[in-house]
Length: 347
Image 1 (cartoon, helix red, strand yellow):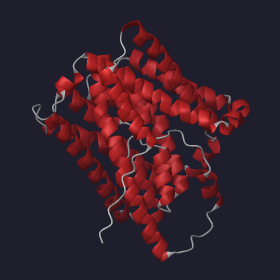
Image 2: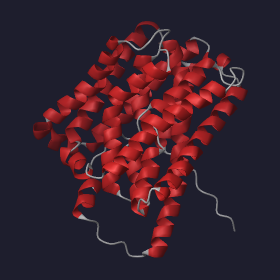
Image 3: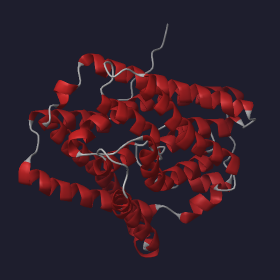
Image 4: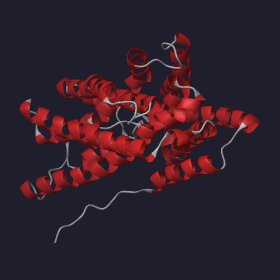
């Protein structure tokens, strides 16, 4: 019998779909929207503060020595992905992909890698967890500044180049709370570690708030009239092709460069993913409210596609590792430390 892979549709994915549906039927407007903007901004700042408070600096230091692996992952994330996105947008006719969706495809390719799912899939595949922790963390911290600069290079934001005020807004909303969390970690780190539910609620709740606001504004400006079914189908195909290129390409590249199988899994899972957690607040700052909903569509689709595809791939890696070594060796101290780390991002 042919065993079909089970779709990994988790509660958060269904909550995202429900949020888009709610914004379509009951978009928030006027003074209520202003109040929710302040609430969403506060939730995002709290989220990055809690991440900073919970992330041990030892995790980054422990994995930083594997510079070839980290350099390859960062090159895939911030060099290869942006160039592929530019190539797709440059060759795709506007009749198939409206300009706002094309901008969303390019924006998707400029985002940092995920953290939690990259680490989880690397662990499931019995790969180098310590390297996955370090590389995905570096990608997310660096992305707070690198992604806006790449947006300035590849896109024109709101009709003009990216301004220093915009970079300052992102730094104030994302980087400053994270740095404050790191500085206050000796006093609040233990409390944050004990309250994992608060971080999970803040993490997912802030994303849902920003998605609701973005899609409410987009619906008010005729979102679903601007995106015909043909464009949605094209967008889905583009996301699938981009993911397939990076899953297959990173696998071949790591083998050609002589990385171990454990390193290969970390590179494949960290170098092929894009972070919804980072993308949602950045889109709210970088793009006008009328555009942000359309820009986020490619990111949201890619988010679920990468989870389903990587779940199947991680299982195959694990089965292959099990066949070679039914009893996995006791992990090295460095890997044990990294495996217990609390990740910077959640999706």
